Amino acid sequence: MSTPTLSTLHSDGTVTVWDSSAPRRISAADAYLRSQRLLAVAFARRVQLIMRDLRSIAALDVAYRHAKGKATDEELATAHSAARDAAWSAANFYSKDGGRAAYAAQAAADAAVSASAAMPQTRHAAAEAVRAVPARSARTELVAQGKIMREMLTA
Image (cartoon, rainbow, N blue to C red; front, side):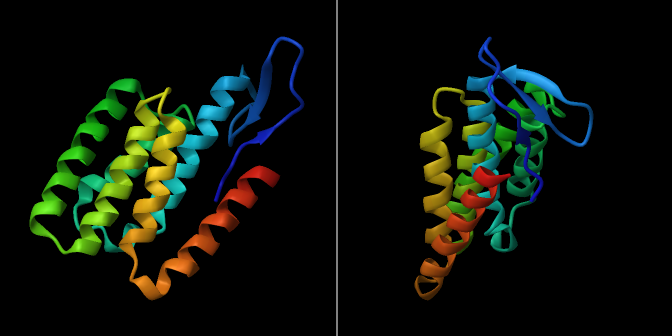
């Protein structure tokens, strides 16, 4: 997973973020929200293979690009709406597991859209990803999520 590297906190409350391009300075609050959004996407990606609706996968792609500063707010709003529709469709027409996976994608899109709800939506994405896998795999999913969190924190 490609995660940003953060420099030391500057005295003006900003941090420097390195992506594949040149470094840029953002506020510490924006860096925190960005990390929550990337974490939500990473959790939802864990169950992407059982997502049956391409709108869910597209929403993850847009949410990831938006967190990296490479998608517009308008693109994100459109993807968020599509993810919500996909989750409702999945709940009505697909298997329980596929529905849970779609809800994980919706939660990731919710985290990307809502600055105030990034942390609760990240937890929601994680929980839905765990619920989407068979019960015997839930512990494995939790361990994998813990590994993702450690990688992001130590990057």
